[in-house]
Length: 297
Image (cartoon, rainbow, N blue to C red; front, side):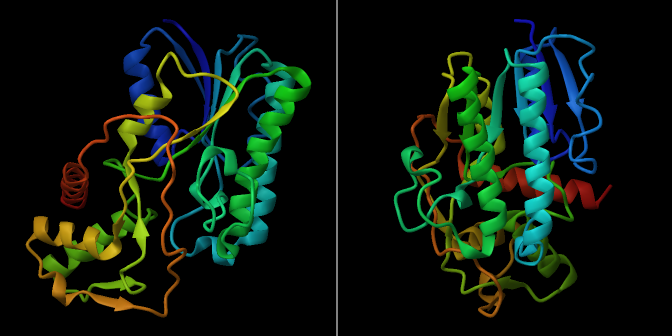
């Protein structure tokens, strides 16, 4: 099948994996790229396809970083991400209303005190530490729903747990990548391994290739939220122990700093799409091998 698609956020973790998988599945298709958030997507979108009609717009771009970044940049995140989202929605309406808009939501846009099921997205309160970023994710979904209501334009919102896998950014990545880096340095450079929190907070992770495979299924329906979940979550201590076992590092040496930001204690999505998740131990081993390969280049 030959498709014309636009992808924003192609240089991000998900974007890189998505393009690889999409290109293999659809080698005759045309991929248009808007590869920066520096201009809030405003400069390059107007004539980026040279009049070609798109089948899909995959909107992965967002201005954010891992760790406690959201704590210190709530105003900047609000302005930048609202501009990015407004610009892509305006482009969709003006130039490509026939295309299906596929955008990413986030688990932090759920109220952690109610079931994280698709019908509860945009309901209740979000984690106050992530309020600005979470609300911009709610807003892009709300925008797509509004365009569907008024103009009958089609959309999909995909909400995964934390995505993991190889080809991650060594300098700016979520906790599992940071665990690998810290424990590796503890093993090979005798550095003290200090992790944020008491280690009993739980997190769910999903193999990025599994998420991409689900997003690329040809029978996906429009105008709905897709909640993705492995239906398993582990404590930070459990993830650290898995990494320690692979790297042959004594997990009892790890220090837990309870003064650091840890986020919510637990957040597991309730899925409305079923699949067989890739084994998490395989994924962690693959990530460690990728990390070792990169630092030894």
